[in-house]
Amino acid sequence: MTGEVTEAANGAAARTYRIVEMETHDVRFPTSRELDGSDAMNPDPDYSAAYVVLKTDDGFSGHGFAFTIGRGNDVQTGAITALRPHVIGRDAEDLGALYKEMVNDSQLRWLGPEKGVMHMAISAVVNALWDLKARRAGKPLWLLLSEMTPEEIVDLVDFRYLSDALTPEQALQILRQAEDGKAERIETLRREGFPAYTTSPGWLGYDDDKLRRLCKEALDQGFGQIKLKVGADLADDVRRFRVAREVCGPDYPIAIDANQRWDVDSAIAWVRALGEFNPHWVEEPTSPDDVLGHAAIAEGIRPIPVATGEHVQNRIVFKQLLQAGALSYLQIDAARVGGVNENIAILLLAARFGVPVCPHAGGVGLCELVQHLSMFDYVAISGSMENRVIEYVDHLHEHFTDPVVIDNGRYRAPSAPGFSAEMRPESIAAHRFPDGEVWKDA
Ligand SMILES: [Mg+2]
Image (cartoon, rainbow, N blue to C red; front, top):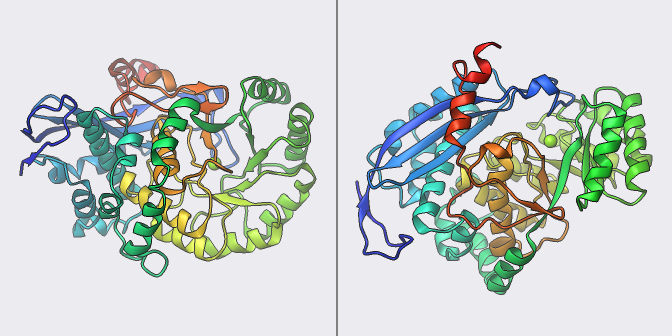
């Protein structure tokens, strides 16, 4: 099962390789000790990665992970291990075929289908395969994807269950339209980066002084938008929104995020009660599975826009949200649906419906990953940065070998080969659960 490598970094003659090893690690960061990442549904997260490394017989490695928030990260790591037979001995050049093979493993599929722990495990492995492919090509992933032809990109997508909203021909048309101006957009990205917004000021566990200080810092750092967590107590939300408005001014975009806290009717009432502060969007107002609920909320709070996606389990639910007119902003997550391949399907769906993609990030490593997908979207699919921002949280980046760089409120385009997914070996060792240094005495 070996294949020809035709795009090696050094341009050397084609050679063959195989994946010979899969390593997994249960890595957890004790973030709950400082209430970083606290919101209305997740009061004490320990940001974690079910981490996978794929190694080839010629010395390359690819890194990927599923993001969890602590307990259950061992289950997630075990699910990744279940995919081992699909990758060991493979060359991983045709990532469209390998992705579809994993998603359609009939016995593992029973655990979803295409949702939950098993699907997130597929995401980790698919993303590790893309990291490997981009490293072998000597290019950052966003550029590798951007330079593929429309036909090659369409081959990566599983169109099953999508054809009532998006056919391969329609996808090709979107991609061909974006061919024009690609080179200029690559140059724009390298020069200017991609706009970011920050969630750092808004965690629910922070007091008003910390909120005020962090809002001021966000402005000073050049961010064009912030986001506040809401949904635990309305009086607190009103007070905190007022503090943020005082610091940021009346017209500055401030989004709010309820992390699935509400039922449909309470979402409508609560968001209306915050309407005087002019929320830029309301994020995850209710269950990520409730398509009609999101549509009802969108109707009930108009003109305040609804955003969701970080917990949307697959392309089919995204399709329905778009068909129902339930979304004004679509928030992909790099490590929840079936990795790069399924996210390409979702980016194409968003383009088809004319909805801007503003990714979810934060956690551990999610900023590192998702920046590549937004940049690819800009170059090769939507062709636009208008109304688009990538979430940024200033947290845990020091554990990565190629951490994101934020420059005046914008993500700088990565230049190192790969998917920016590799965690430092010493960080993995120190945070391994339960035997790493930080957990030993916990
Ligand atoms: Mg969120």
